[in-house]
Length: 73
Picture 1 (cartoon, rainbow, N blue to C red):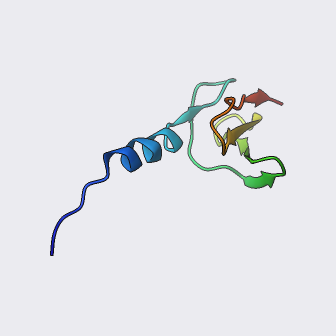
Picture 2 (cartoon, one colour):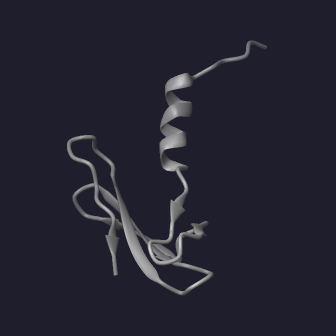
């Protein structure tokens, strides 16, 4: 058995695993309350802070043409 290493895959996984912080209190957001695939190649996450209850959303563009933006609700 040979060990395979895929450094490009690991760096792309780390980009998705970047921790988000609450805009209101600065606490770490662990997991989204809901996620949805948006037509046009985007995944949208809806967040609620466990500490202060503030809500926000973020999106990830599945194609690399333009970066997705985060929005505070």
